[in-house]
Image 1 (cartoon, rainbow, N blue to C red):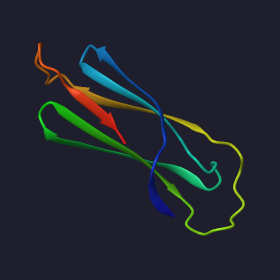
Image 2 (spheres, rainbow, N blue to C red):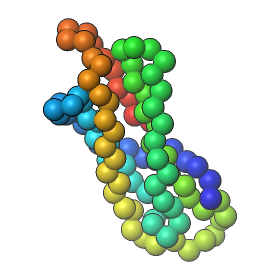
Image 3 (tube, helix red, strand yellow):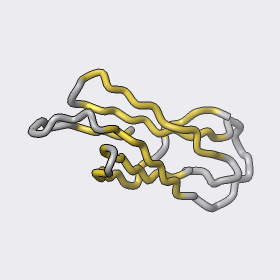
Length: 94
C-alpha cells in the first residue's frame, strides 16, 4: 500500500471547554476494500498558520477489484487553547 493525500469534503472549527477542535470530513477515494485511513500530520511553521495533511493508504497495484463504497471519514483534532484574542489564524487542510 502507498500513502496518498485524502480528498477533503468539509472542515470546521469549534470552541470547546479545553480549547479549539478541528473537525475534518474526508473520503477513501477507491473504496474500503482497497484503501484505509492513515492519519494526519500538523505543521505549525508559523504561529498564525496551522497546516494539516490528512492521508490514507491505498493499493499500489493496478487492475485490483475494489468495492464501490467511498466511506466518509471523520477526524477530530484538538488544537488546544494557545491562541490570543484579536489575532487572525489560518487553518489549511491538504
